Image (cartoon, rainbow, N blue to C red; front, side, top):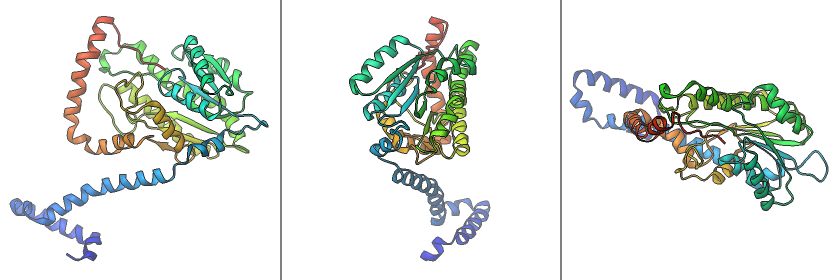
Length: 349
């Protein structure tokens, strides 16, 4: 076979048609034909090739952390640093964001449901960088998720600040059988994962858009590959809310091109929801910041990219084993919590 014929798609279509007709009459002969296995290899190679090119393109467009500082840290006020707003700031990725921004010299608005944890976080951030300013806002999004609540408790307190970056991080979720989850927990999951992102973004979008006329502004929204690429059983409500986070963010990025809006589709990251995951929150945060302003969506780390893209390609082949594995874990661990405590453990930043 000549090199020219290899590159000619018509040639391969013709061969495939002949093989298909032959298969109907003599399947044994087809299974011994070298072109049959060449076709299998090519069809398997194309998805891998596409994902590899996508990863290379994503990687070469990343920015350095120093560039992130130069781009977003300067304030519209002379000789000052801009502010970063982080929801779910006292644990997991939210805390890692706060620590990283303090290290880089930003001022931080930390939002969380626990005042005690906010006080502890303030001391930790000032220990990292004594020059950073920290403003604490206590709010429980399971109870205060309406537009009026978020405007009164959060937006009215920070609208005078020069905010450069909003991090929509707060979220909650569990592994559960849908029929085992009570209505109160469904209610809390949907309202915590969806409404704060909508109303806090809406409350600050005009301010960010105004800043973008002279200085750069950005929004980072935490989604998950469980809501975009990998749809596992026992995560029905959580996956649905994460899909909303992702679509909302990307649609908003197309609506406000002057603001750098990024949806993060992270894989397994070591937080309260994934205590045994290998990827550390600080590693994920650094990867996210490098993609800010260069992409509309990112998986963060390379391991998350492989998990989100190669995993779904193979999922149809092993989904029965995955479903059985998740079912076994659920019955052995989460179901026992449900029986003993009458509810599943709450995982909320």
